[in-house]
Image 1 (spheres, helix red, strand yellow):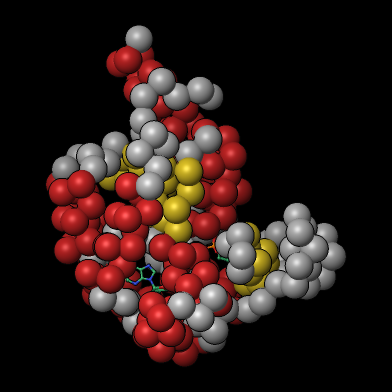
Image 2: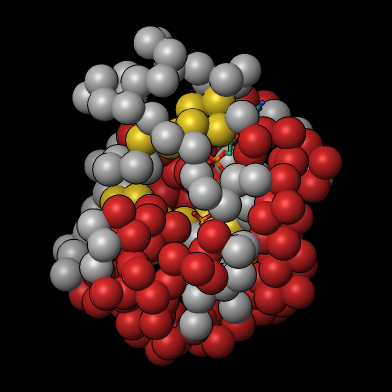
Length: 223
Ligand code: G5P
Ligand code: MG
């Protein structure tokens, strides 16, 4: 679908709910630029930047990094792509971050993946990630063509340091206390759309149909 005006979306959901997986499909189908705060932070850790080294301990322990750090990072990246339609994955994660985003941009829609916590815990311990691209695999759900290697580059896959059972529990707790209030924030603005289920392949057709409808309205508004 060719967009006639810029479209700005956010995808939310607990750790492991499939934000990265669904974002990849949205980016491919609708041409939105996928910006993942977690991928950006991990790229900094991998490149051993000052910021990456400072944030690594919090991330490995399943805690959120400070609002001002992540807001500055993401808003700077968005400023660099003024002519792109985008999908933010993992940001905002607190009401303070949502307010910082609102001050700079008007968000068209927020997709919320509502997946039960017990489903998530199993997934994360069998996730493999290609760090440079953020592509994710799962031993059962979407295994790589060659074990341990990224399908596109052939480079090695790694397990994230924060995917241990203890850290996953802490990440889910942080989600409940700090991120769930953001759902209410967007619900009260009338732009939250929730998709519930336990399987990405069953959730995806609903997300796709919703975005087709939403984007055709956006395009009509311009025509
Ligand atoms: P991230 O990187 O944003 P999380 O914790 O929000 O991390 P995560 O873990 O990346 O989210 P996801 O993107 O929601 O999960 O899920 P995914 O990767 O697509 O899917 C998870 C696994 O399940 C994969 O292996 C996938 O293949 C598999 N899968 C998908 N669907 C199915 C299915 O239907 N069935 C099965 N069996 N498997 C499936 O943030 C990381 C850290 O960075 C910091 C924080 O410390 C955070 O903990 N951070 C921030 N801190 C403050 N503010 C922010 N805005 C921050 N952003 C990041
Ligand atoms: Mg992710």
